Image 1 (cartoon, rainbow, N blue to C red):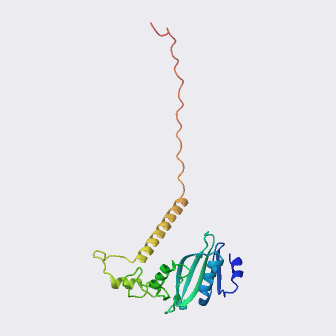
Image 2 (image 1 turned 120 degrees about the vertical axis):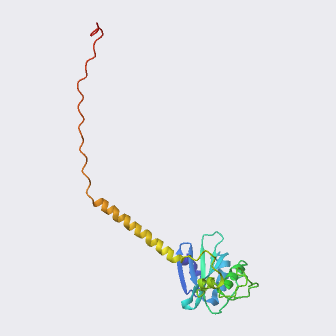
Image 3 (image 1 turned 90 degrees about the vertical axis):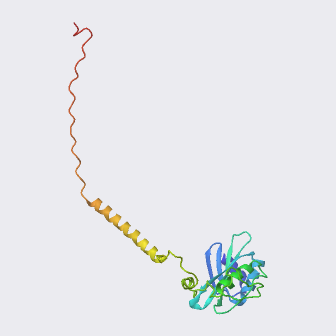
Amino acid sequence: MLDVLLPKLSGFEVLEQTQRRPDQAFVRVPKAQLFSLLGQLQRQHGFVTLETIACTDWMEDGVFCLTYMLETAERERSLGVQIHIGREGEGIATAIPLWPQAEIFERELHEMFGIPIEGHPSLVDFMLEGWTDIPPMRREFDTLKFVEATYEMRPGREDNQDVREAIRKRKEAKKAAKAAQAEQAQKAGAAPKPAPAEKVAKPEPGPKAAKPESGEGSA
């Protein structure tokens, strides 16, 4: 797909490109070229649908990777257009003028990752009413710490186990059981087979007594 599409996008600086499948590819461009590229893909190359706007938190690099997933009307091709923005307060303009459904996607980005969306008409609470903590999809958010500080353990759950530890022990127990079964099967296969029991010959039947003819033996 990219071998056909990229020559038509010669005016854009493609920083990275990936062809995942014949019908799916990804390109990364500078943030300044994002909306020019999205508009051209929509108007001239058939990518008329915005499926979603995804975000990946690359905390070690200090950036968010935003992916605008586009699809053709026939749904035979999909293209992810990616940009990097700084994690600490860098914003992005809204895509609502191109796709009205971007309003929902951008509200989620703002609430879950704390990304400012410039020009968005309604960045109010979306799913997290009254949330005041770190945006929960950022990688520095400590889910366990938040749960322990916010909620109380129900009475009767004092024996609650760590889920990961319980899963690890269960896997180890299954592995040990399989090993024991294999060892038993190996020992059973190596043991000498018992000698077959001797067959006892059946006695041959004797000659049958002749039946008396009618009239014989009668007085």
